[in-house]
Length: 148
Image (cartoon, rainbow, N blue to C red; front, top):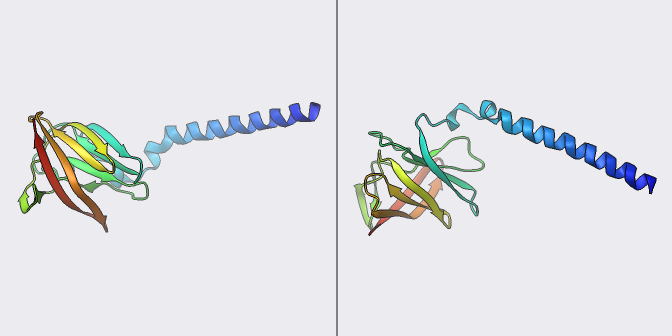
């Protein structure tokens, strides 16, 4: 019985050290992230696609020319990939103006591994990324809107 209590005490001491390490890591993680992970505008929110490990972020305010109005960061990458280029395949038509280009994002969620977006200024429209595929830091996108 004494050996069991001694072993339990050692386990609790070890767990205490692990908890301290995790806390220290979380407190200092902002300093150790690569500079390329920093987005220089306020975010309205984020959505995590658990299956693929992709974190989607949305810009809080409209910003002219912002291709990072919606961006994706993977668990293995060291930077965000812009998902709001100037042109996309929109409602099944190629090379169309992207309604999310430079937009502010009011709401952001994920459905499966794809982002669902409500743009600020047009709260009656839901934008759904039909296709999001990544290849060497670039994204191939197909976007569909649903009104009302």
